[in-house]
Image (cartoon, rainbow, N blue to C red):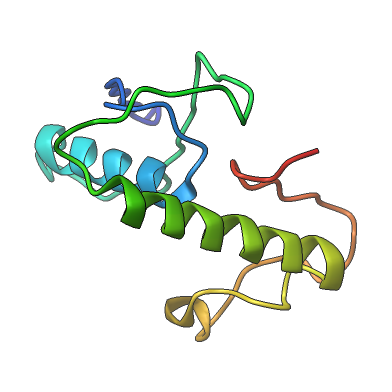
Length: 116
């Protein structure tokens, strides 16, 4: 039996490099479209039409932009700590049970908000 693949897509309301905003949109889209007819083995998120960080953006009147900027600044700080001290230096408490990040450098994991 061949595996079953499904793809869903949706635009974001605002340009972002925030892993949290990407994950929230992916979760929302998945819950709207997937009908739970079978088991889910893996979920992949792909971002397209990316823009460089630092480009001017128009604010959304319906979003707390100050809170959003603080969260994005926090995410950037977390990524900077990971770059400086390693992938296991800081991570979400939800992952403390079994964080599946390779301990050796055989595989490079790149988060969407990382600047290179």
